[in-house]
Length: 481
Image (cartoon, rainbow, N blue to C red):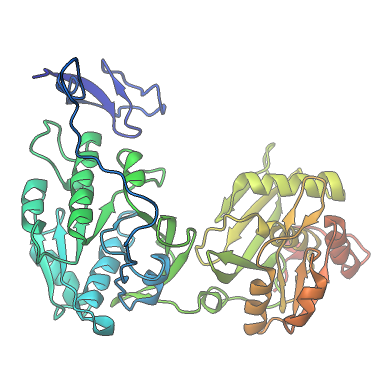
């Protein structure tokens, strides 16, 4: 039998070293190396064959065509959660849900379990909630606050994987199991403490193996680091079938459930929830909610028609240009990529002749939503030029389009879906890139006025023509009430 030896494993990236060091050479993290006991290797007889010895294997191969059938999804009835999962949870799948502390992970999962246990659509599902962080009384108090205390959800407080697997490994076991959280679970066969890389990886592997063998859905709740990624080994996200991130700002009541990986549905799909005194309430029309507090005729604001997965979402982008009091002007961004903002500012200066360098730039996406697609370039540029010229973007206008380094405005995907969502919310005009299939667009063209831009200079000229001929001061004197 192989001897056990010690190694120092980074708790951020999972890299192993023979001796302790203050800094991990793989990910440059400080004070993350923890001593763990690992096996020196597999048994010597594993996989060996010699003269007269036949290698035995239980592995069998089959063809691509078989008698496999698509299993019915387990639909909770909470439309926003089912949308992110791709239409419901697939039997035998593993989901990983991550998010900041206190963002509402345990709350939304308890609501989902209660909805599944109340037999939506005639299904009769047995649901179990296993907590490793809270006592049963604490979970019951949350259920009472959410008004779901009468749902037939089975509760347990445990951290031992051996005990959990023994309770789940039988034919009439639960159909959906929530493990809150995977960082608190441990295997007694490992000497490391709970939360380490080896414990998280091995515990998740045992739960996922049992879920696929017995056919129940397992939902793992994961902690996140200060960088916003799920704590533990990165391989944990590769082991599961679906990875969901629960996002949101504490100052906003909105919560965004985003799918970054989904083997059974589209990625980058979002579900929007609103935090209330009775838990998280789903938001069927997030565009109307994000634009509810919007004021008309405000400089430095533009409505962007974006796509989140398969859903069009309209959100307001706000920009502020102010004189800088320091030698190096500030560039503050909330909800968008700071490098993308630097590129748009450079194109405005180099290709359009605007003087932006000595001014502070502040950019914000209202509502707490984070935008990742390049289609927001034109809306950001419109908000910046509006703030510089003190001319507001018309209140009934939406903007979208990608900007190239030469200043050209490039088409983006799913333009018709964006325009139809804008027309449904009462917008009558759109500033967009040139469309490719004009003949095809005429048949189902939305009832909205379109103005196409081939180059960013055309957008800048639109604001300069609307502004008075006398130069305006960008600062407090140009702010409108």
